[in-house]
Figure 1 (cartoon, rainbow, N blue to C red):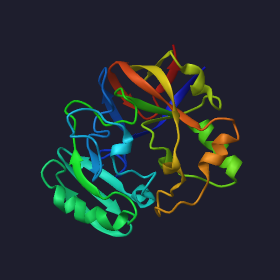
Figure 2: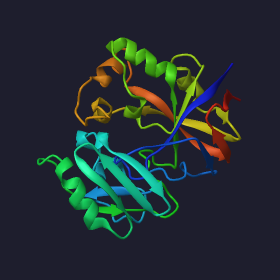
Figure 3: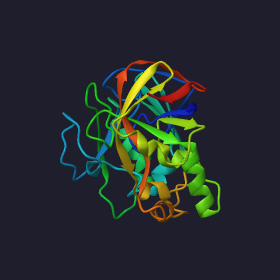
Figure 4: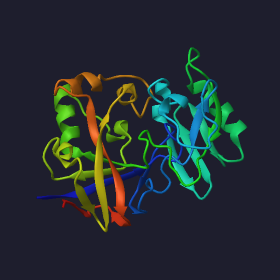
Length: 245
């Protein structure tokens, strides 16, 4: 049985926007190109940006739901951010941090640590996992959650990289330790992704509006999607085959 790629997404700045792609070329041992290149450290972060750090060091949607409504477009070393409550911002995250910090400040809750600086770890996307990962998400699992909640949900809530159609509900959880060919690339599936409050925020409005975690827990887990490692690089396009090896 095989599935098909239905969506490709990257998130240039961790928790600050998403961008849809039609194709991508992945590299062994690396995150999806352009994904989580930068992260926004808050004022009490315990990271200097020299190495990977856990998500607790960064401004993120779980604590600041309005960030969920940001969309992004990355071109070279510049990123354009859009949000329904803010003017579009085009800037270079490495060199133009102040204009970003001023732009994002109204979106941050007053009772949370303020965003302080943008960090970038050379050669390493700032994924939630402690290894450079690409997240794989199953449309059948997404639809089951929609059915459980009785409403349509945007897949953007899950911040996944590669979406696939045509495989059974929760099939991805049986892939742990196995290899999956997607287009020209091969991934080794390493972990289930345990979800947090970030998924409760509406990606159009930035308001928390649905209890995705309660829905997940009805299956006796709080997981959605899996983290995988690229072990063979290559191009992936929409409609490419997804096959467990």
